[in-house]
Length: 215
Image 1 (cartoon, rainbow, N blue to C red):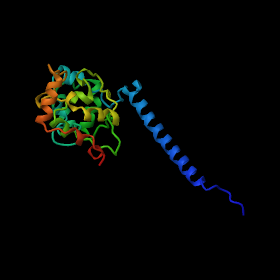
Image 2: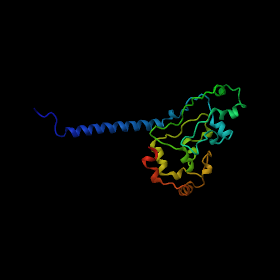
Image 3: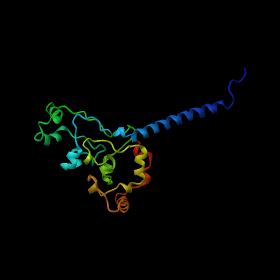
Image 4: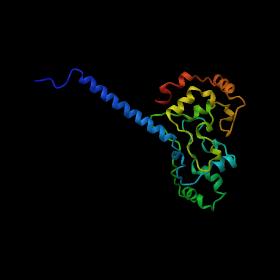
């Protein structure tokens, strides 16, 4: 019987499969990158209560840790229980229609289904506490929430965006006392950043290892 395939056909087939695989991966990466920078994705999600950081942080002056109680010692910053909200709203603005879902849920011992603004894939590990301990301000990732009437996502949260910071963390570092300060600006960020890298024992080589974020 005549040979149907040449000796090189197996190699060609493998190269074709590899090329298709690379194209699929490249397409996914490009799609995620374009989606992350799409202004439409910055549209604040609809929440059960239109919570305003601009009012609570910018006007009232609440510290981030009042609501996000675990941000300094756990991977998750935490979502405040309704009892935290009701420490004020059991007395303030109790007749406002906007707060009716909150007050009713608390009275009925139900939870509110808040929509996530910042979401990472399951294969990405992120720890709020280590970033806080090393002097990365909330503003670096979440933006000026003290000016947001409705919370929106301002950072793409792509792998490239994270690595840009991990390769040059000095540009984002601030004293730990200023981590929760909105609008903080150092007189000389370059000098301060290098000083804080030494003080906080930050090693950029370790930050760029795959296992740092993928565990």
